[in-house]
Length: 121
Image (cartoon, rainbow, N blue to C red; front, side):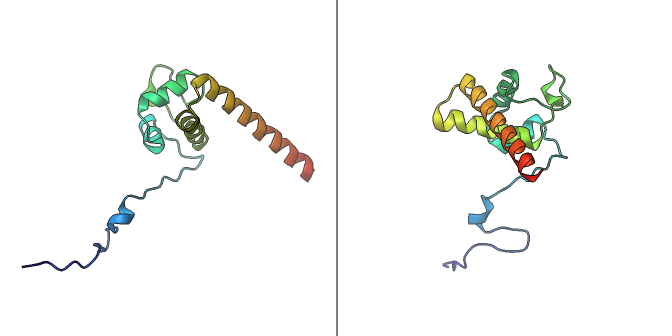
């Protein structure tokens, strides 16, 4: 007996197969991510995040230097990790170049904040 194709399974609690691949993580500054949560959010291995911390590119909150399982990261740190990853993956920038780029991006942000303060003051 041939089974009729009725389209995707959309029973309550189930997503159609095409939508099941989509996922999102919403992070606010009040919630901290663990090392494993940050690595999942960035789709990298935890070793990559540890390398970014070792190089000083990320600074976990409440960090015990030798206990990565106790590290907590903010949404800002997650954004920095994603920028670092894009610089390395998409542009082939080494970690020293990533550090310089992140420093320059921080300075640009600081200057924009100062300009906005001057404009409204």
